Structure formats: C-alpha cells, structure tokens
Image 1: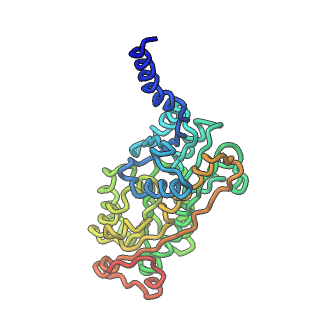
Image 2: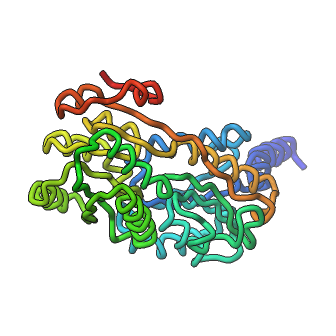
Image 3: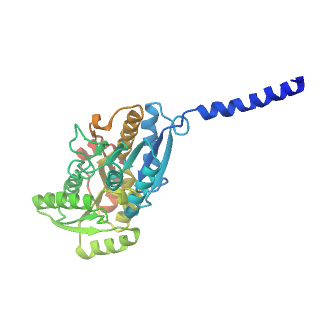
Amino acid sequence: MQRRDFIKVIASSAAAWPLAALAQQPALPVVGYLGVRSPAADARFIAAFHQGLNEAGFIDGKNVTIEFRSAQNDYGRLPALAAELVQHRVNVIAATSTPAALAAKAATATIPIVFETGSDPVNIGLVSSLNRPGGNVTGVAQMNITITPKRLELLHELIPAARVVALLIDPANPTIAAAQSSGVGSAAQSLGLELHVLTATSDRDFDAVFAKLSQLRVGGIVIGGGPFFLGRQKELGGLTLRHSIPAVGENRQFVLGGGLISYGSSIADAYRLVGNYVARILKGENPNDLPVQQATKVELSLNLKTAKTLGVNIPNTLIGRADEVIE
C-alpha cells in the first residue's frame, strides 16, 4: 500500500470513530408528561416536576427526555394523547390531574404511570389500595377535592350572616364535580345554609355565573377544584373582587388576583413528588411497590385589602394561621 493510500485509510477510519461511538450510546429514557392545561399555564408546576426529577439526578436533555402532551383544556383530547405516548413507547407516563390519569390508565396496562390527583384514587378506580396500588399505576394524592367543604366552613366563619352561598364546579370533569357537590352539599346542610351549585366549563361562562350570583343574592361563593379552575385562579380572584363577592379559592394565585381567601393543597409540592416517583421508576423500581403518596402540605392565604374593600372582618386567629397575608 502506498503511503498516501495508508494515510487516507487511517483518516477515514478516524472520522468514523465518533459516529460509531455515538451509535453505541444508549438511548435516553423517555418520560411522557400528560396534562390538561398548556405548558405555559402549568409552568410553575412543571418546574416543580423538574425539581422532583433533579433531586434524584435526572435532568431533561441530559440523561432523560420528556415528551409533553397537553389537552389545552379539552378533556376529550386526553385519550388520543395518552395513546400517542403509548405508541411513542415512553418509559413512564406522568399523568397530572384526575382526567389525565384516567385516560393514561385506559391507554396502557404495561407502561408505568405516576398520577397526580385531588380525588381519592381508590374510589375513582386508579389503584386497588393506597399501600399496594396494584398493576402499573401509582402516584400522589393531594387534598384539594376532599377539603372543598373546609372552604365553605372558612367562608361561613368569615361571613356568618350569609345564609345563601354558592359552589362553582366544572361539569366537564364529572368525577371531581360529583365529589365536590356531595361534600359541600353535606357541609352546607350541617351549617344550615342554602347552597346553589353553579357551573362553568369555559371562560365564556363566567359572566353568566356572576350574573346568577347577583340574581340569587348570594352572600359568598366557594370556587371548586380541578384543572380548569386551577389555571384561572388569578382571573377568578379578580372577578370576585370586581363583583364584590366574598369568595374562597384554591391557592394563593386566587388571592393575588384579588380574591378574599384561598385554602388548598400545595399543587407544586404534589408535582415535585410525582417527579420523585418517576425518577424511582426510571431507576428500576416497580410502581406496584410504591405506595400512593399523600401530599399533606396545605396553604392558607388572605387578602386584607380585599377584606377591607368588602367590609369583611378577618379574625386575628385566622390571620395567625395564614401562610401568606396580603395587606
């Protein structure tokens, strides 16, 4: 072989080495993230999900890939999006919200699923038990649906003279809507209050809702939980202030928007725990061996400026219990 030819062979082989090495690199594990709201609307919670992954050493784009699918507030799209993630052969599905979790479970019995829900996961059929979930599903249960009656109790504590109250629910999410209507209905009956259940499934419904509140002479309203209202807490807080209606929302965004008070589970903390569980499954743990976690962190926020505007006297004892007070 001529020296010139020898050099060409060596040079071409050297150029091929990086490609060969690249081809031998194992593919990154893929997490399918199934949500109801858009990534922009969920940015705060997605950041918490990333935090949970990062705590276990997983960084998106470095040693894991995340495939995001959003229903853009259209629950009817969730089954197709879940099926898409299954076809993509993701390693784990993170299903954030009750509707997403139910859609994911219906789509696969083999790919591990980690859910986030405010409902009782046993009652809605996600798992067979909290300690031994069974099958391919486990996750995190926060308390926003189960503590909705507590929001009514807080409203009654602040506005004891109000005998007519309302609950706002999203009927497009029937599992959550039924649980809230039942729980708040029982609480209203025990407190001797007249309860009106109003519904909204889109932003266009809000004008009619607040017109109805005025017609019914409602003394206060409880904003129900669920993905739709979660993404509109600030907007709803502003509407309750504009219409001069004492209201209890789900989280601090409601109070920041002008709402009187919010009480609910820390959704961000629940998403962080979902990230933790996804990481553990990526490391080889079986979802059936991971008991459903209870996200027990609950936050109370108050807006004293709104209270003054509405003429509501907030007791010092309640102020002392608050995690955040806006003056």
